[in-house]
Image: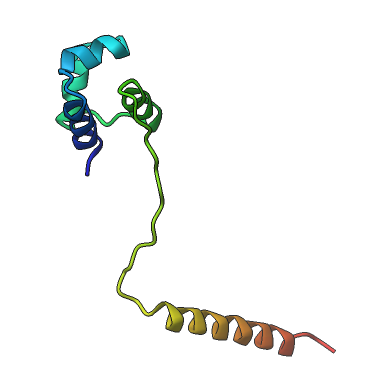
Length: 95
């Protein structure tokens, strides 16, 4: 979901027009329209403020992405490479 789609959904859920939301935000209806049509990408602060003006809270929650890799295998490979580099650097240490 884009920022514009999110803003439009929240605004419509609250039964507001773009003009009404713009008045609350002390901006223009055109500015709200540009955001909703994804012509402008608002900052997180701006989007948070607009959503707050409608009585809702914007939560950004990071979630893990599954790239289709076996995470266990990746962790084992990384650990093996780490131990191999430690062993290799230890064998290069002059006596």
